[in-house]
Image (cartoon, rainbow, N blue to C red; front, side, top):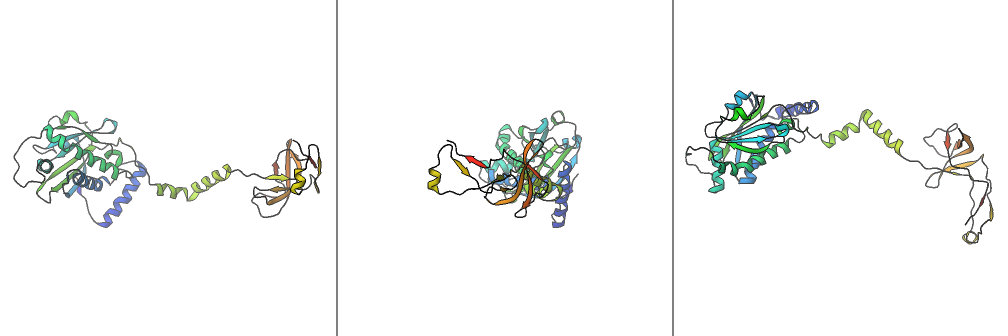
Length: 327
């Protein structure tokens, strides 16, 4: 029912572009095929020390009736539980199940012909961790891809040794199906692994790469808006200085309460606006605007971004021409 996964470089490029557009629409897209290939092989390698090679993989969409015909005789059917109470299945052909059991009990994959038998609860318990590890690996691989919506979040729930109850357990919906022809133990055994999950996505959406999000912020209107927000939120502190007086330290230490200091050149028609670094930025005149003390800029001593001439800046109460030192 599905098309073979091509391995050419040009096809991979096209698939990545389709996946990117699918992520924007929140729909499914390419990605699960390659992710499942790697996740399945890594789960067998890491948990069982079992070499597993995917010789062929097909991906397609099937109806419930078609899914019911997938399990071969005496296959282990792992029932999967996922987001939104979704139910899927993973089918291990008898040859695949036997290789996984043999490597755990004999330490290697046997080459003798299989003895026909139904899978048991013990078999299911021995491969459940591998099933979960493969599904988790697929979810991690799809963290930034559109297929995560339908392929992520599923885990092992139970098993069946007979496919007949599947019609009662599965919903009558479309299913996305991944079928892998695998070789185990360097070709000692070969069989098929089938993964079928509801095609309608019920899981979480993929996480957009940080670099992509930053690129959008760094370009176009988004960047201008972000910059404007930062600038408008920044504080700019200016001190209005009417006059300065310099005294020796000994004179300052001798100041007493009520003593009057003369401030030379003090006047409301000439004051300086000084930044936090002590440098004078502009000059102005003291006045009022809408009942508030204000400064009218008259001259800028160095280029500033504020307009000069008619801008009015509210300030605190003006300092008097003379200043008293209080205790």
